[in-house]
Amino acid sequence: VDTHSHQEKLESFFLLQGKLKVILFSAEGEVEEIMILENKGDSSFVTKGRFHTVVALEPDTVVYEYKEDRYDEVKDKISAPCVPPENK
Image 1 (cartoon, rainbow, N blue to C red):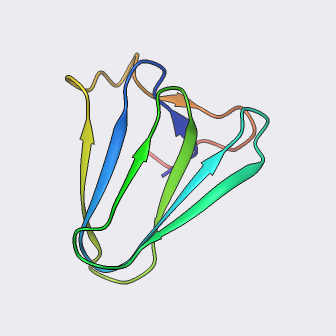
Image 2: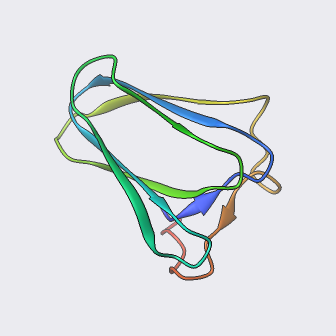
């Protein structure tokens, strides 16, 4: 997942199985925080406008991802200018 933000929506990740790394960045692209979700039920919350990415650290990692309201691909995801876009 490319580094991105959601300007108007909170995002949450809930680990169901496996292991997940959540990385939070400053607006300038500097890593500010790294969280490892490794126990079933671990969660991470990303505030509105915060650049972030996630990385599965184990095969078959399963995560429940929640965003406020419906997802709009055109408006909701703003890619960080400091990283290349994800493969589509």
